[in-house]
Every structure is written in structure tokens, then in C-alpha cells.
Image 1: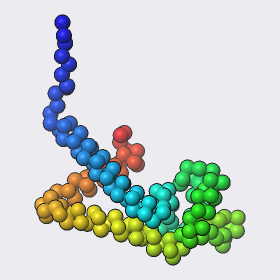
Image 2 (image 1 turned 30 degrees about the vertical axis):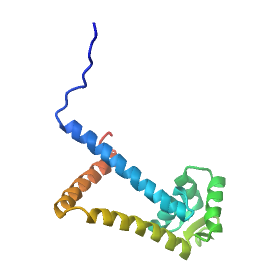
Image 3 (image 1 turned 120 degrees about the vertical axis):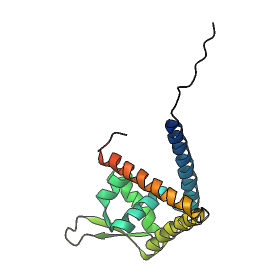
Image 4 (image 1 turned 60 degrees about the vertical axis):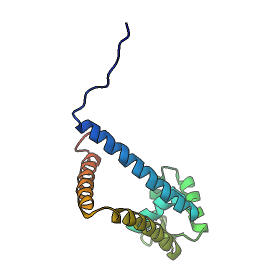
Length: 161
């Protein structure tokens, strides 16, 4: 006797959630691919962009923190920063309070490059959002705010993913 296994019945909400996750995954993949292509054109890796963005938004970073951020030891972090320094994107200086601490900061060229990357992403998203009707923009905004709040709760450990 042949037995047919049917998928579990859903209320529709599960189907909507699954579709939403699928669409968000595709959207993030496509945006990451576009961003990577732009980074590649500028000769930057995602790791470089990540570190430069951290410095851009938070100020100079100690080399030990660079190692933590990129998940490596200090020798690897030193090589990583050296490649950026050779390209004139970052500089190393000693902390004025503790000369043993080496700080990594962006140069003017590094600031310009990271700003250009973020502006390119902003222009791309603005162009896409601009194609949506006003009602869809408002609905999307409400949904994204709700999703961000939910993700923040998960990140803070209030809820289990």
C-alpha cells in the first residue's frame, strides 16, 4: 500500500512568514551582491569595508579591538591594517594616554572612500523605494520598524530566536 505524505496544514500566517523570509533573503543577497561588486571595483574587501565603517562611525580603534572585530590574532590584524595603510586608507598612531596602544583611524582618502560606498548604497535604495507608491512606502516602513524592533529584542536576549 502506498502512503501519501501531505504537507502540514497552515493557517496562512506561517505561509506569509515563510514567503517574507524568502523575499528578505533574496533582497539581502541581491543588495550584498551589488555592494560587493561596488567594493570590488574600488579594490576593497568586505572585511576592509567593515573595519572602515566601524572607524567611520565610532572613531579610532585600538589594534587589539581590530583583531577582535575581524576574529583573528594580532599578527593577522596587523597585516590586515597594513594593506589598508599601504593604500592610504588608514593610519596608525599611538594613543596619547598610553603609548603602548596603537590606534587605527581613517585618512581623508579612507573617509572619502567609505562615504562614497555608503552614498552609493543610499542612492540605490532611494531609487528603488522611489519606485513604490506612497501607500506601499508607508506600509513597508511600518513593517521594517516592527521587524527591527523584533530583531533588537532577540539581539538583547529578551527572546529566543
